[in-house]
Image 1 (tube, rainbow, N blue to C red):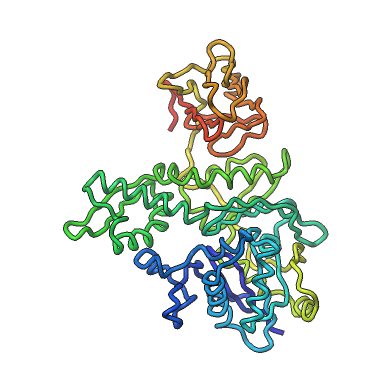
Image 2: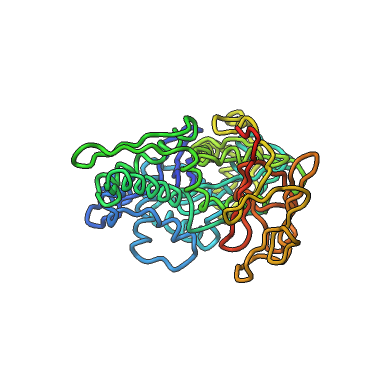
Length: 454
């Protein structure tokens, strides 16, 4: 029996057979009902030139569990028909890997739509558990999801030869598209300052920027900066954007994801972080993930989950045929499809992290000697925050200096964030770190005066 596998990930909708990828593109599709030959087919090349005829939010709409409008249903069915139906053969056993963002109501609709398109589904499998099994990972693994419109994190534990999903957290209304949009806005503002040219007010330039921005960010992550040039009708406009600028623009969209990691990783115990390759291209993210205590970071290759689902044995496929269609959150370990590749230090890592000597607050550099308190009612000499700020305790956190360095200690019930991640009790500090307290947040910057912080 042949197994056709598909991964319903809107960032890379992949289809595979016998371990070979047949198709893998983001779920950005034509949505013009007047052109049925292209309806439901990939449309990233025209997403910004004809946005009213392109859909890239249909899967996120389904994932929210709200009532689907007829146009959204039509786009979803058309995409299933075009992407999976193009490769489905009589006698195929169709197995779908699903992300944590798609919950029971959404999966019920998917099953019904596939059946209506003559694509009967044999079984559903948790995508994170499939990924862990396919790479032969052991112990506790936190698998990250990077969708177009969401970020997610799933805790998978391998015991007794089975990888099983234990918990998941999903942050909606963000994702790779939010990061891409923030970066496009970053470039647009730089071009406006340089030449008064706004690439987001011209469809052709906007489309070109849309296509170039992700590889440009990846280049900046490795090279330190990238120069983007766009035609203006006259002389081309070129701007150089640094790695740090890309990282700062992406930081708000990543906060929920980093918080999810902290909520799922086992406190004080070793674990593996499995990260999609596309997410690791975000400047500044890789060193933050490598800095997580007791962890190692492994790269999740593009299309691996669909390939792994298509390699399910004929015995498993046959057992699922004709039975009630269930979502399998446990996946038997299979022979690894490829060796797990661990992320090593890269060009964006700082070779040396100097301890901080001062904290910047309201234009002043406060010396870090002994213990410095932060909150609405700190001790004398501390950082006093206004009573009108939400999510801040009277004694929120403290910065403590000792012979071994400077440490951040969280005393609040609201939480304290270090470089976008919530602090679990306490954390070591270095120059260049940023502390955030409150909601939406007050930031404190740590610097080293008179020290080499390169």
